[in-house]
Image (tube, rainbow, N blue to C red; front, side, top):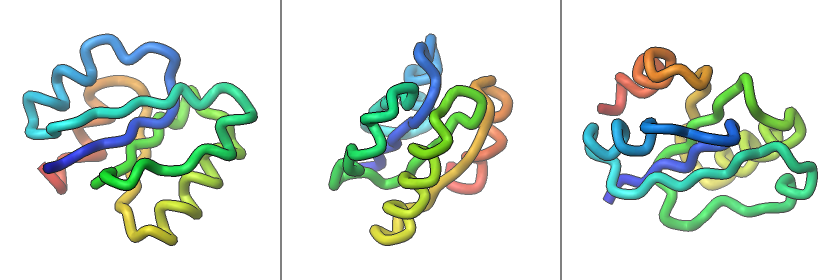
Length: 93
């Protein structure tokens, strides 16, 4: 089972549907705007993390990076556009 945690952006639109069509079984989303989200942990079943850089709290981005490294979860960075997301994830598809 491949799951993807998306950090950033308030609304994803059809991005989760497109990711599902590429083979991701579960797509989780954290909007990443509020400062208290820094305390949140990464769900255990997460295979990959995608940080949408143009819509994320910078402290949260740093904490997610540290936790992903500790749990050996690959992390990718992209803008919110589908083209940027696809380009960032193309090596694992």
